[in-house]
Image (cartoon, rainbow, N blue to C red):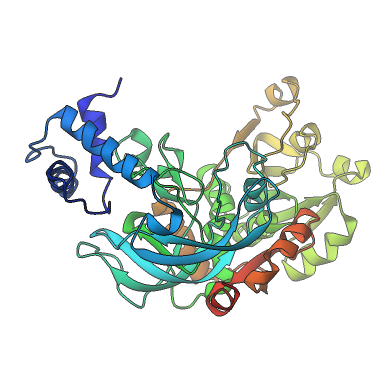
Length: 424
């Protein structure tokens, strides 16, 4: 049962709905806006609890009857998957009008995350079609709402993996919106108004300023886009689990989109970094190009044995099934093995190797908005960007096939600004 208080919290985040002539909706919106402006106070809302429920359902019903290009006033273009084949093609839809707390921006680049590949094929079972992927979105602000405080027209900005949360739970109040049970994903999720969110394989974006990141002018937009997912995914566990101490020995399992970012951030934090990979041919890349200190072939038992008990922590970025037991053996006592990849099959791990050394196996998923901004600022200070291959939007289906084969060094980034218009 939804309590009045919980329902009003939901209402406070239901801004930017299309105006309707019916008095109940107009008055409901005014009351919701007043509550939001007061930071949660319900003073001034005159509607009854039942009226608010009716108003909310009314708006959702109205939105459900509309085609994607009719839901909102802003015309938008993108590339979308229509079904589980995952094939992307041109797609007309719409974005909401810029609300008083919203930032609208022209999308210039969007990174391609491996999760996009899973989502377009519904491999995780939670995809909603039509699906416009993309949660590594960067561009330039074109319009801001009247109550936006952090951004101005012309600012370089980005949006990552989420565009909403409840704002009131313990996680949200502690800058951990990424762990909010009502966190709203940037694409293929239901927004507060009941419409489906669409991602960054598109020409424009509108988001609440709370979920927008300022990109420092010193960072190139194309190579910065992947930081909004891959970057924060590895930065957050390095910080939270205390692996950011100068002189610590940090292992990085896997040298892909996440792994190469983990190497860069850990090195900038002053760590000694060892790359752990199944591919011996990546050694030169890891040491010469990314400045890792050493390299281990995970299938070479002599190398693994020689490195036993030498690492303070390990960031495991691999999403394919692989054994964890050899990795725990590389840890010192009190060492931490942190998983940021998501293999489909459950891991098997005996307890005694953890008990004998008080070792920890943990996980981490992106980061909150405050930490994401901190990560981008850290990247600017240390000159950290992603290694990318820029592609036109027409190449996205081929890029997905190549990504499935790990045939990219290390992240595809779509040149939205220069190529999407010509393809619609």
